[in-house]
Image 1 (cartoon, rainbow, N blue to C red):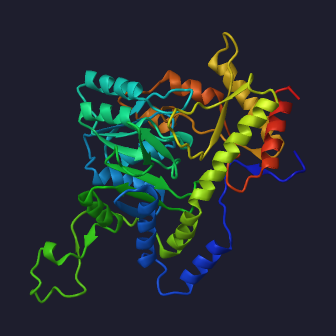
Image 2 (tube, rainbow, N blue to C red):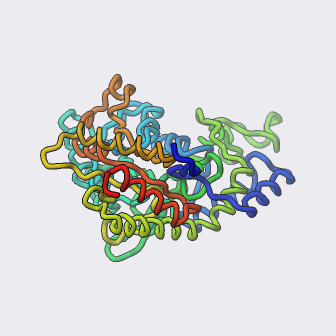
Amino acid sequence: MSARPPIPYGRQSLDERDLEAVTKCLQGDWLTQGPTVEAFEKGLCEHTGAKYAVAVSNGTAALHLAYLAMGVTCGDVGVTAAVTFVATANGLRYAGADVGFADIDPRTGLVTGETLQAAIDALGSLGRSPKVLAPVDLTGQPFDRAAVRSVADRAGAMILEDAAHSLGGEYEVDGVRHRVGSCAHAEAAILSFHPVKHITTGEGGAILTNDATLRRRLLELRSHGIHREVSRFSRPESDPWVGPWYYEQTDLGFNYRITDMQCALGLTQLDKLPRFVERRRALAVRYGEALAAAGLLDRLVPLEVAPGIGHAYHLYVVQLRGRPGESLASLAQRRKDLFVALRAEGLYCQVHYVPVPWQPYYREHPPLVGADLPGAAAYYAASISLPMFPDLNDADVDRVVASLGLALGTA
């Protein structure tokens, strides 16, 4: 084991302003859901361009509520990427829907219009069609919005963008730049504020949308299905049982609320989002230059980035190049050996992600389509996520690349 301090693949970046904001909240009147939650939601709208934001307790809650608010229920089908965190698919199951998986392009980790269409066509052969598509901005690179919107429109499906990796990113459609989360090409998008993401609230998430009706439903589902709108009460305001205290539960909602304490941190983190994303992009450039200088690009290849994309670099993923005629099992073993060697040097890299259809739950509850997908397998066999977070310095990058060279026998 290396005597040098370990480097994780990701971590939060906090400063005195963050601590002061949380302390001020602790000294105030509101600890749970209060005015700071609304201020944070307004800040999210300003940074993404969406009309509405609903902050919740975590990214998984955001997925669950978004599916429910979009009307996904028992008997429906949702299609998502085979390579994502399990929550993207699990949220569909929470809503009672069946799941279908679309393959990915192993060079990017992203679904494409073609892979989504293939999944939809396979569903069609079963007499089913998707109610919602939930493509994923894996590693921080936005998927092809225009292609996915076209596929969704042909299928009569809604789109929920899983943008947990891509806050601060941008994409281009027909020469126009759009911010991730603007919902310019989707009914809704979700974010995550886990400590390894672009900004953190400890735990936390949000749903973004431009649909006022969807927002109202999200707000109620977030808090037990309760509302306090007099015009919607089932009893008249003159009823002696009704007063300023009165509320009604009209749906089976959840306690997915986020706190003012968390959102106080989120607000100061949002102020630093442009700087955080700029630093992540600079680190990606540094990695590329260092890998080239070390002569490693014949062994390792970074993921491809499409033209017109403003990558947010939640992750920096490299893939081992396959050898002529090499099986995926052999490639996966070499990736495992490399991972273990890096861990021995105190470099706590990660793999994002085990294909969701491979998980025991989805083996026991098979998806309607997409149980075995070649692109997902090829991506998983070769990929390692290297350390990537704003406080990582250039010397840390050089240490990672040097260790890669040693482990691959090129140094």
